Image (tube, rainbow, N blue to C red):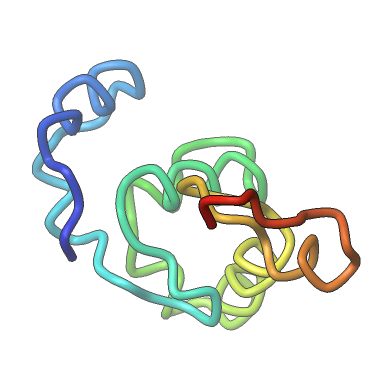
Length: 98
């Protein structure tokens, strides 16, 4: 999905996850989660472990997890982008370059 794959090895080494799992981390869920970083963050916030990172299909299989992925995308800024919630409440303003 256009991600920079050069940091994947380091990311997986710090999370103790096999790098082969990255191929299964395609866009899923109401929040359109994609990539190891989003799956890991979502799993840590919702479950407090690596369960979603180890089983990415959980996002589409479980209705509650599917719905919660939308809340994460809506409420938490990721990948250098502001969360829609922050924009609407005026908690984020673009810089001159943006």
